[in-house]
Image (cartoon, rainbow, N blue to C red):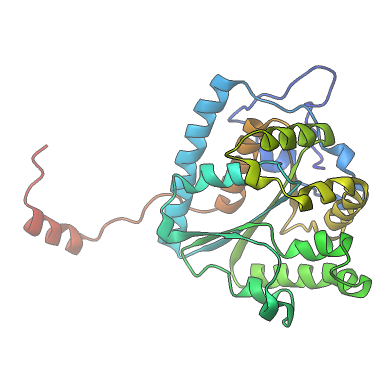
Length: 293
């Protein structure tokens, strides 16, 4: 994890959501060689009152970030990975609900179709990259190659083995082309995941979310943990670190993830809107008349 450790896992202490805390520093993996999932604190949490006010503030900053990308013709990519039922969809909904849908696109990534299986696995992601002024959100991503495709043997050892180098090159190419990239992994404990699965099983509105694949994946948790840890060790780079966000408390995870996204994508960007030209102001005055307020 980051050199600055969180105390969320110490004894009975619980991490509160402090607007002054830089979560992108708290949970970034800057020294990946010895990373283990056990490093991610399990009991990071936030109280309800703090959550509401902090979320409102972060959503305001998210709007400003999107406008800054529009003004400056920037392009950003947000990658979400994590365990089933870790809360990826909840974070994404709380982002997109306050953003202009014309300048953000969410890509829920599932298994490749027949045509995509005939192509290099990165090809379908190249096609989904956002243009200038827009943000692309990937709900799962090219990391499937070294996670589910590795564990379920949809890719050969040779294929997923070389994918780490391919992915690092792909992300370096994005950076060279001006993309801003942030990668979030939501980590939820085995027992908490089981409870969320049980909740889905008994909720008619959420039963569709629980599939045989989810249960199969859960039965292979140890193998998936090995794949996740190797993924982080081999693809957490200085210009594209993994942010391993504790997600046993969904509200904390939402704040930590959105804060990380805003600060990471917004680094060194001027959030102020460009000044309106005198010519435009004069045209508006003639067309609209004087301000009556």
